[in-house]
Image 1 (cartoon, rainbow, N blue to C red):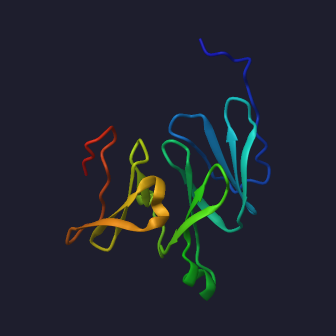
Image 2 (cartoon, one colour):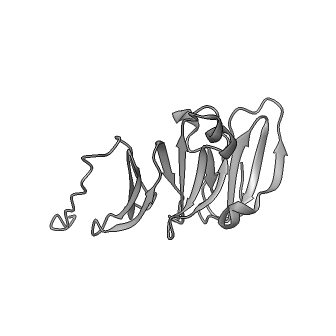
Length: 163
């Protein structure tokens, strides 16, 4: 049976309602009006705090090395900067920004890593952009063009990787 003595309560009184667990269950990311907090689920300890208001939704990469956040564009400056942001979990630093006009829960997260975080993919206008997953800030490594593409995803599991 599970060890019920290790119950941890996280304060989410200011949360916007978004809380996402890592795929292995070791971390939880809580979004509040001023940013995001990453906690370890074992102890409830705050691992990282990223001050960044306006986050609507967040995802965490399979190994927990990156956070992905999306926010609504509200000004012309937001449009220039990009509203889909990759963050390094360890440091809280911004890695790269992308533009994403529309948000859909069905297509979230719109940037997906392989289980080992070696590759990351993003669907953009009839194309799949492929990135070096741990060096995503270096830009697109490959493009796969598929006319009429609306959705593509990598299959889970180890290499070789498959769409």
